[in-house]
Length: 329
Image (cartoon, rainbow, N blue to C red; front, side, top):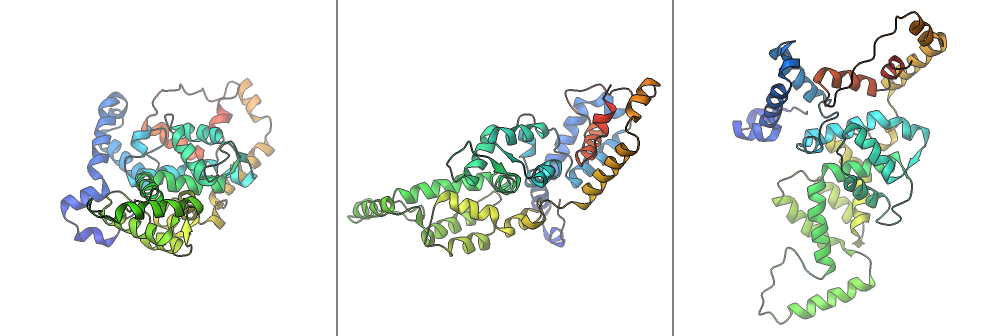
């Protein structure tokens, strides 16, 4: 969670609203009450310390329900970052996946993650066409970042776009007694029938008005302006694709690196190399330790991961295969 000196100028209520501190405190208490026997064993103070440390580090969203991971901007950014860390290797291998396959990957991290969100992401990548096509990780993840982080904003932009296609201007109030209203609407409709998309300058004006009154997060106006001013006309999905590829969006959210660095993660690469080296040195270590009875006993699965279990799996998601090795017979 980003911290800056501006927080010292906020009122108490504004600070709590901006940081969602009460939301996290409420969730921490709820989790404690639901699993009191487990958490009380190692102390209440330690529990709260570890809970808020995981929130700060962005690991708190692992295996949580969808309503939780989308509840705050920090949760959304954390989930996007974890998805990249866990499945970066797919992009490094050059694998292309379908909508259902990406949906399955997301549901490994969030069991009730909706397929509809993944389908909306695919429409950005594939321009609302050929939804059964394969997608690279790079194309998918930046579009997913845009769709997931700015979901409410994109829904409002779509309403504006559809109104403009029908000849309506969301920022214009039409007086019912005006005789020019109906001819204007029909004229615009005829023009849009022959040209793809809507007028970029009018679209920009409407989106600027939306940003001024929007309560949720939205992309920076400078990014939107840069994209729309470079085209005379624009379609909804071409606009979203341009936003998804804009490096300013990733910098604002802070969850993904620039596209050129997407597949680079030195720490994870070093860990993978270390594990591969260990396997190469002692290829029969698993069977020998199992025969000798020295193998670590398998951990009993729980339908709801505790804080300690989540932290263990978080470490393994960065490339470790320790859990897999310890469960082999």
